[in-house]
Image (cartoon, rainbow, N blue to C red):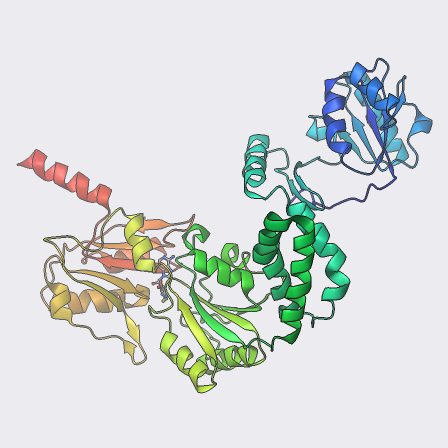
Length: 464
Ligand code: SAH
């Protein structure tokens, strides 16, 4: 972040705009929404500027900017479009220590005016550090369409009510009250009976929330998916939005944790593959402790919580402590890996069953129904398989699997750094060793990347 977004108070503070044409006018139209004292310097002002001056909305000086004009100003805009005059404005602003913006010239500007969605007092500023103004405008249009025009009014009504709402204990009870006002009861009342109805609804909501008993804590076991935040479910996003505490696995990337409510406590309880881990008992204890204190706990697990995620053990810990829970399923790594190589996990005539395996269990390497897995056409998604590559290879070949059975390793499925390592059962161990595979990886037994399958078919046809 090169530019830090802040909201600057301009009430009764001088803001200077230099320029008399359309560039200055377009800046002025935004600045007129503020409570600043707008001072325009223009040698030949446009008629619209004269009209604004006549109505007392701006103060107009019909000459260039001079050194004595700036001290005390909050901001200066150079909106002249003329090189020489712009250079002089920048020089004067720097000398007076006043931040300057040269319209459409990022290099010479100290600050940027963002694209603004104005639902005063709710204001959304969008900036791209000059990288993509078109994107900023598209985002603005999107938000303009999405936010009710009267959102600002609702916020003002709410603002006047804040001292009364302070009778509710701080924290979740107060948040619940406001959430109900802004997102359901408030907009409905406003639509039905205007501001008076919205005020009335605030009073009845408050008395209801005051008498409500403390809500019980709860644990949501939430699937974070394979890593791409776009692959979160809407329910997962909502849970993150409401969480007081997020206990997450190591495989959940920061981009997903960033979606949690800003005040939420984020705790990494990651088990690090084969290295030191947060013991399961400790995770259970943390979960029970927070939910027992009335918090909404999101236990965020990579992929789907019910696939190799120790879900049952954690549910049992909740039940033993009398804590309510629910599960929000997620997209498991096998689905993401299959999507990554353009293949289907099942296919008529090839495999009518799909196995999700882990290469490890509590005793070490996990034994499986090798005979079934070795059959032609069998498909399995193998989790946590990297260190077991030689073991898998040996067991499968011993039970008659063809050495040319495709095995594709998909590392970091769905993430920007996704890597696909195609190979066969014979090459599996060397594929992994040569690939220096250090990230989470899924092995798809019986599936080759679609592109490779296509190329192989073409080769076969060409040879026949
Ligand atoms: N509950 C998770 C699995 C947890 S076990 C799920 O449903 O996906 C952890 C293993 O999942 C890793 O060792 C790796 O084999 C696999 N895995 C998780 N995320 C992955 C990703 N983005 N790409 C490839 N494999 C992944």
